[in-house]
Structure formats: structure tokens, C-alpha cells
Amino acid sequence: MADRGLLVFENTSEVIRAEDRLKACGFQVKVMGPPPEIRTGCDLVIVFPLIEELNILRVLEQAGVSPLQSAPVASPLLAPVDLFATTDFGDHLMVRAANMKITVDKSSRRIVNISGGGCPDVPYLAREMTGKTLDEAPSPRSLGSTLCGYALQLAYEEIVRQCS
Image (cartoon, rainbow, N blue to C red; front, side, top):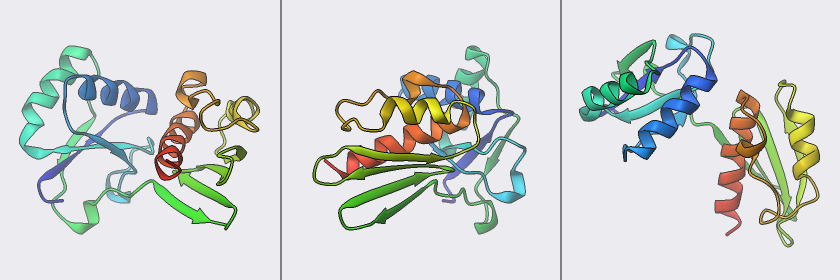
């Protein structure tokens, strides 16, 4: 990770906007959990190739979404935290991303449960997605823009990947 840096933002919506802009410009970035040493309130950071720092900061400034801080991953204490955990229950597979969980029936790929988080849109997300297959369910990101909705989007993408 010594060749990586972290971008720290004030809130989740800025992380989402920055990730969208950077990916649209072709940068290889990844959203992860911040290490405790630099946590500022937002539970997400963007990990980026350190060699691209100046170009990335220029793109973000032009987009009007500047990070609070940019820091190299210089020690194990500053390593970002992986957001994913997968649990196989035999007939069901659950993926957790940050504080959100999605569980599917492995044979039918039907979503049987969505849980976690504390955002006000979690019941709505669960209602709109539970009971549908991964192919039928709407993208969580198309339904909400809270940290929980974003985390559920990451879990959704990961469970689709694992069930393909």
C-alpha cells in the first residue's frame, strides 16, 4: 500500500461525487473505510495511486469537490479498512459492506433480506429490493444517496459479482 494515498472528505455525498468524477476520468480509485487515525466523521475514504495525486487533486478542484486531506498510506496504521465481509450460510449468501448487509438465496439469486445501517432510507431500500432477484432489483444507488444506500450499493455489486 506504500504506493497508495487516501483522500478524506467531509461527508459521504462528497465521497460519492469525487468517486464518480475520478472514475469518469479513468482514474483507478477505490472507496474504503478510513483508518481510525484519520477518521473525521465520514466513514469512507478514496484510495488512489499516489503517483496520480496532483492530477487527481486538479480534477477534484475543477469539479468543486476538494478533499479535506490527502495522505500517503505510509504505515500499517494508516491502511484503509476493507468494507466487505462475506458469510456463506449454505443455501444463502450474505455480503456486508460497511454497516449494510444483503442476503440472497444462492439457487434463485432472490434477495431475502436487507439489514443494517441507521439511515432513514433503509426500510425503503429493503422494501424495494427484498423478494426480487438480483437481475430484477433496482440498484440501491438509484433509490437513495445516504451512507447506508451507498454501502448497500457496494454490497449489492459484490454479491452480484460473487453470484455470477
